[in-house]
Image (cartoon, chains in turn blue, yellow):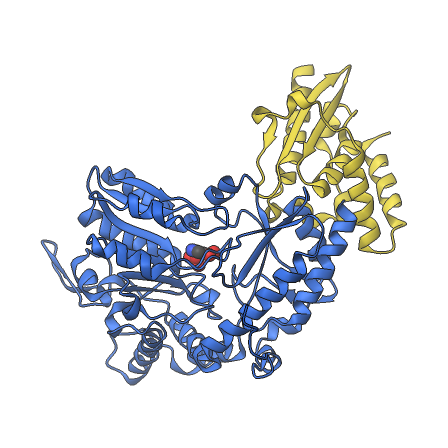
Length: 413
Length: 140
Ligand SMILES: Cc1ncc(COP(=O)(O)O)c(C=O)c1O
């Protein structure tokens, strides 16, 4: 294996200083935060953007003739433009503000399903999906009579691409898979998944919740039809996220929710809808969220996504190596390409017990099924202990984790 | 001993521990040592679902007192179950139904009985008390 270049050029300590919550303690110990896959902490810039917005710019968007409303609209639309650059989308109006990944997938499932799905059609998911990329499809499958098919997961946590090729068929109407697995860390071969689907004229939705914080995303290069991610996992506020959709799709799909903002003209006989993106943004949007998300995405782009990815890859490698030296420890998810998370169990120690002891030591990890119950069933386990990384984690964080796990094992065995 | 007296005893026991490690080591010991439930009761019917760890609970009358047995797949949860059983098992149903379990807070384990912990313990305590109320009603 090629040794990765030196970490010296990545200013982790400087970046870390930007996150006030990382300077605090938990149970009397300096906080070691290893749960960024669930939600990341927020840098000063994002907090300031939110504060500044409410102090100096707030008014409702898109309808006021007065200056303040126009400034608020501009701040909101600026968030959209930053998100467009983050995804390298071709047009601003392909970038929709939603509450998060969950709402994005529900939107596509409902709107696409209503228009295109019929009895006997198939929706292709994978065995490593988060519940939020399963249940919305189940709901629309139930309503339309479509069927869900599942691409199996191999023992190392990679998708079985041979099976995928066979499952893609004349009945397939949608492929929806995670870009990066939140439980195993697997980076799926999405280019190939998309190419194979497009060969058969099938659109693809990528759940990018775990990819957005760790990789560079280029929706045009991917040629992906829909891409969803949550702001709060990319250092932005909670309650805001992005759905990217190719213009041709968004123009075709019926609206998801009705209300103000999304209409051109309303009479009781007939309503015509507003242009994109407003057609999909009914009601007063999360304006401050869009501003905060813009600040967060800009922060990530300024720090450099390749530099962040490299730093996190090194941490992951360091963590994996050190964990594997612990007797009886098994890592779930050993795909060749991984990002952001490491899931493990030690002998028959219950993840709840491990998490409880680590909590006492000031170390925040996630335990349980991580909203991927079918995947846990696939491996025959009730859950795992998951450590996940952000741009601000250090080797010292990992050292504390390793010491903590060893201590927990001594106590629990 | 009454429910109150047993709680006082447990609080006194825990006062000896100087840090969280000793406390948890003790709870883990409790969790390891107890034969908590007859295997035939470890089935769906006795399962209280917690999203993180699972708990099984069984109750039966023994003369005029209630005997509880319970188990969990997580050891720390088992240890806390052992304490709950020590307090509530062998008590008259009426007293169980009315019990104020203040010891949990006093020994610093409150967070384990928080509904957000999703370990099944909150539901278990509710279920134990419900048994108390129901069995008291049947007795009458
Ligand atoms: C892969 C994946 N998809 C979807 C989600 C759901 O994201 P949100 O709860 O922000 O809508 C998550 C978050 O846990 C995730 O990790």
